[in-house]
Length: 513
Image (cartoon, rainbow, N blue to C red; front, side, top):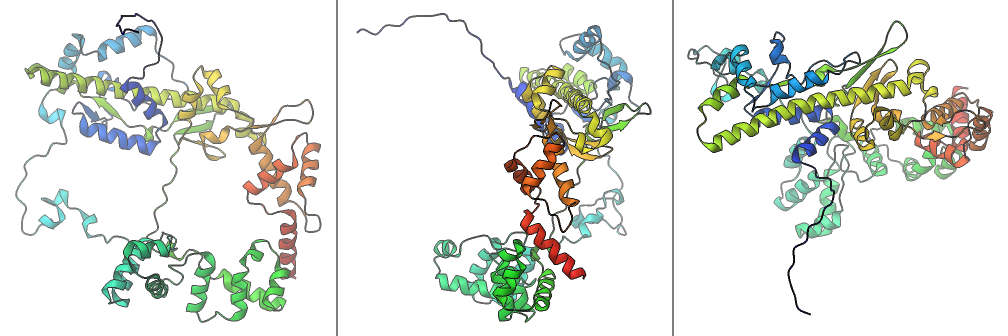
């Protein structure tokens, strides 16, 4: 068969995601910290973007501000205003040039207020020095004199230099220090390390035994039992009875004190003393050094109750980056640009800056829109508590606000809402439904978890509730739930089984008596 070429015309539809659309989707799912980092990068790359830290800006300049306050009272502007805004942001219109000439001052000092000005030479009595990066009293950096926090690796390395002088063993020790996590445990296989270093396994194990004598006691352990053993040996309290106790830590987890007493061969009093001694040990000795600071959750949305018992929903403006387009600089530089490459660069920067401002504003409005719908759906939770949390999914919110489920999913990722009942991630309000045993409404899975925890917390020592009994109590309240679901919810809340709870309550009552 002969080969031939031919021309065909086909018509079809396809979804094309432009780079700007991809960036807009990316902005939507960023947390407030990630968004701030992204905007800082754009401020460095784009000369037409600047921060809007001035409160007294002209109205024309504030109209491009991406940090404008959004509340649920804000109404959408009319089509006419939207069209005027688009024209004002369009670099092809002549209105841009007229506005920038009348509103903005094009002096370099006003365009770049942070630009450095030459000052007097530093005196000999000045604290600043080249080593601290200071050229004047204003640039003196006090943080240059603050010592860094001592990390666990630094602490172990210092001890390694003093404890081991042999170069080979010290090299092995350096690698073992690198395998220690922040809890103080060594995460790695000694055999693989010996093969990688080309050293005998016995030498690696011998070096590890030396490192296990370092401070704090318990570091370089490979599991909890070894960590406790190292600490007991450091205190000279590792006798045969306590060794047997450490070997049967699983019985402690099961609350099987009778089996643990038989295994150790001790009396009730001795067993209680050993348990008290174990409680004084540190299961994670490495956390004493170089603890990573916990970043507090900053809410993206505030929910407050009005005097008429309705709910006010507003964005946290402190989490919204406040940037605007420096149109005065664009109008000035575009007049002097002669090369086509420079004109293209300025035009691209201007378009990117306008897109970023619009995207940040649209992101804020979308978050507010989703948050308002969540508050509308979960108003009973805000008023009465978690037991009134309603079943909710992405589709219900997406249909109510006429958006796609994927958009709602991105909006609720890494976003937090501060309410009168605490700060919750937006995804917390999306719970599966547990059917009702009667003709009533379905129950939220989170509300059912809360009810199970209430039943367990209120149970008496003599009447510990089994999973079957919890199922019967929930069905009496109109909640149709299976026993395996109760067990799954109980385990997710780290509630022991009825047998373990009964042993724990008996031990607590005997200790009090």
